[in-house]
Length: 551
Image 1 (cartoon, rainbow, N blue to C red):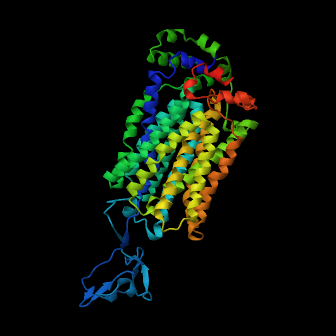
Image 2 (image 1 turned 180 degrees about the horizontal axis):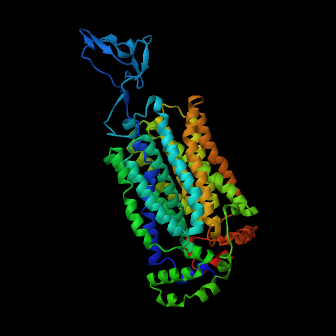
Image 3 (image 1 turned 180 degrees about the vertical axis):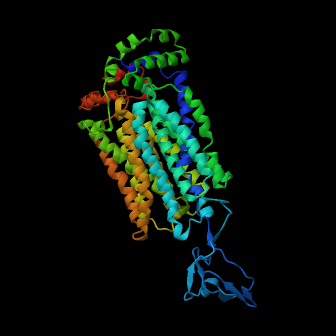
């Protein structure tokens, strides 16, 4: 008997598990807000040079021209004439653009169109023209924070527990988010965003672990997908909040304050009993299992759980508690090393292509709020299809097709003329949906591939590679200035290549979570074809002992 059987005896997917999963999923709604927040808080409105009008800028029949005009007849965003130019009142503006007149960069700052955004970090600190790269730098620093958080917090949660790190991450997100809203300058804004990115990693990693380690094997796909849908709904929530709150400071504050509430109720969460056993703390695990059994109404089972019975039921897991593990165990053995290699590329390419599409909504030429809703809404059918495929077909096939189809959709846009904006947007939305399905699958797939003793380190590795992808994605856009097709080729080619690597990963559908590295090494040996077919069964038919189903 193992932990999966013990979990079934204490209520399976009972009242505790339902409450536990729901409370963990609520904060995920606002994780999307922080990830994609700069689409709105750093939106670039139309802008032009601020001019000191002396009142002598017009004469009878003539109108002054203070800045060069673009092809649409609007003032250039970054240039002004050294000396005022003149044009006839009834003339075409662009035909009198005085191209030979001397120009200079704006000397008195900029004026902004505040119809869509009353205030953004762009308008507050004039991050335009010569300072425009600071916008992307701020997002890259946020992603760097997520990267550092994945490296640090992933390992710490394997050492100090999922619950403790999750509580801390909620508090850090609340404090750093509130401080960001009151940032007096650009530098402090970047520092607090970096800290918020670290906290987001801690929340994501430990939420995933606490969900999968407290639910039965047969519902892992459903609960994992519920967490994914929470992120999807969060994208729609962000669009609504941004539409109603046009000031960046109030919007930042609005998506940060709720984490104080999450911090307060997170003290109710129990530590992962599976982690406690494997960390050499079986007495605490007994206490948590009794608490869960009582919450589920299994009073008799609660009385039967003792330290002796736990050790008898989980001999293998208790023995593992005497061992220590480090990040080097991710590459120490052949099978785990192969898993780490393939999973790293899947995480990197998914995030790389995803943020390449999702963090530049203004390029589509329609309302930024509308495109945010569309990009969010496409996740519903995408994740529904991926969930069904994960249950009935398997994780590996689902992961492969979501990556390859997403990459092909992005590459297809290379051959669509810019005039067909509807077609280009449709392909981008389809590609984003496929990548969202890939994210949903890889989160669950990674937790099932790694054993409990290094699961958080494995998730940390995957999250680290994902953040590297998020950091690199904005930089690749710069290549478009030299070869317009190159960014799309790279964004699309990366997930296709990583999809091919998925072939080297084992299937995990309807198998119990491995607890030790030895289980992964032994379990990856090729099984007879009939045996593999028996493992992939409809969710509704998994009513027997999940350990036996995997044998």
